[in-house]
Image (cartoon, rainbow, N blue to C red):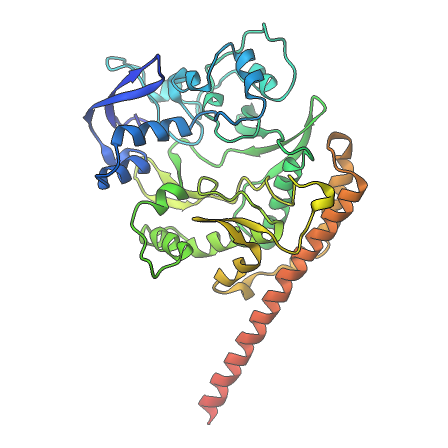
Length: 404
């Protein structure tokens, strides 16, 4: 099901936790885009693709401290969670039910209905008695990614809480920094805050997906049409967004790349951005705000290895793209008001100091990180000023030609 719309009648094997057969198809336009893509490509097995999509919504095998979490949930595999709570998520409106069931989406979805989360979150982030019973009627069964995380409810809002993975425990601070930079530059961003919970540093953000929306990942969008060899990955992606009339597509995607350039985010894989689709109208409403920038600012490197001069990040299909080449892809980089980042490194330093008790960030590392941020902003400013000068020269040439 996609909200109230049936998509397919399937046979699901509860032993192997996989779909075995598609008996009947109904409203395929409402299906996940990856499945729609598979139907266009005869070389792909539709059942296999549907299973890959379904499992990608769940907790991955590489989740930090996964064995501890599974033990406390009293299950042996994260695949067991896939069908719990009707496979409901807070990132889309897909769910499953038995063929003759009369259950309705409005009565069970987690956008509108409350759920238990305290036990699940404690099991994910901190210590908890393994004999304590934890409710599996929760959207936390469908939280992908390697970071420990969980959905909670605060003042009626769905809030995502994320822990750490890197030894430095920098990720929550990196999310806060991305929000701070995004706010100053006027980017569309997901706002993250840093908090301390049970003596652990965490980040929190409000869900940006609403009860009639879903995230379509860049991975599925990129594969929805064959790319022309004469077109770059970035232009191919933007062309697809513009074809669907996504507002400010180029500007928003470029802004994300600029933020990744500043923070040297090396984990902008194709599932870490995309568009929001209205599941009722099927319209691609907007690009996703910038989110999931935790794996940046050299967080996985030892202090002695930190280098902010250059590095490599994920840039569409190129997973080892030099950051120094990112800005070449930006059409009008002179539009970025980089001066608004003045003294942001001081805010960053204060955050690092204030949270030092809960991280593994030494004074030496703090200084390297602050200096590194200042360097990245300076490098950005240099390229923007060069672009401005080129633009002025071109305008002067046009003026002289007209005058002559």
